[in-house]
Length: 74
Image 1 (cartoon, helix red, strand yellow):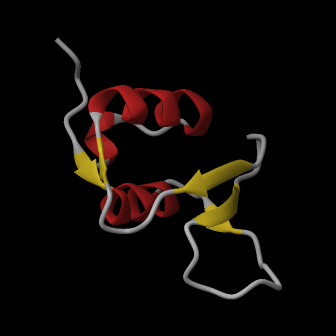
Image 2 (cartoon, helix red, strand yellow):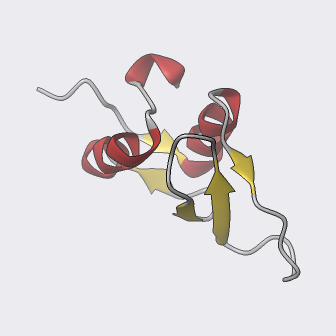
């Protein structure tokens, strides 16, 4: 059984920001689904989810692998 449960993209993005990820400034229109996130010590990460999308456990595990996110961060 997975340690991850489903979560809304808005909640996951908020958790990523709480562990040190920041949005890279963009010249494009705000509000799109694709955002570049940066954090020292990690490669840039592309966030490609709309706020109300439900992200399942498998995708959360993949996001965690690249970002350092843990289930308790949600």
